[in-house]
Image: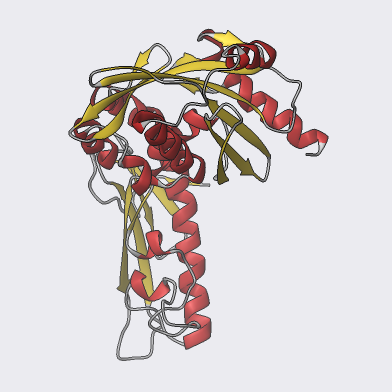
Length: 320
């Protein structure tokens, strides 16, 4: 890892919060201490990973890859419902908190000499190694210590965190991380509110991307697209008028990062006047995924105002 990348990983490793509580405030030990604890079993038989350990291993693997569908499998039914309502950014933010890395990574799993599962998450900016300890299990509850460290720094310190799991039916689900109960219904509004500014910035950027895509489509096919779908990626091969590949699938569907996007053709006439278009972005859930409505009018400018979730207009103040 280059020095700049090491510094960036170090900042993430030391500052990431889990549910608003600094991870450094949780039970923290050095890598050396953690290894001594692991090796203290002496000549005891090598344990086999149990049900909760396998569930936690697979949850961490999904979190590393930012795989929302797989990660949701390890949430309780109540938390799954809240997770589904959260924005993409908030869901990914939750998974980031488990591996302390910003980018989606490539997970690798292994078993250490003591028989404990290990997950390594490799990303362009660095890698994290997560070593699972033995499960402390009683009936439908299990608590598993994990040691999380920078995989590129074998002599560095590790964070020691205890993760709780609960059994629902036959499956083990995440219950707590460190000292904090994983209660997404209580946290989702707070998290979504914290994401509003980021969602609004993203909505402005997406409107600009859509405008660029529409103009590229016009130049390529000598007409405007009939819908956002025609700007999306092709599933059968190269670009076509029906699937031009100018924006990603999420934006082509009309919903992304907590905002809904609308595209309307206006101004065409029988006298040959060129067709024009308008673009709009409105919060999917007003007050949680966003507050301002954004509108790109025929003047080519983006306008913004709080319309309580309704569509804006060209009369709203223009923004840079």
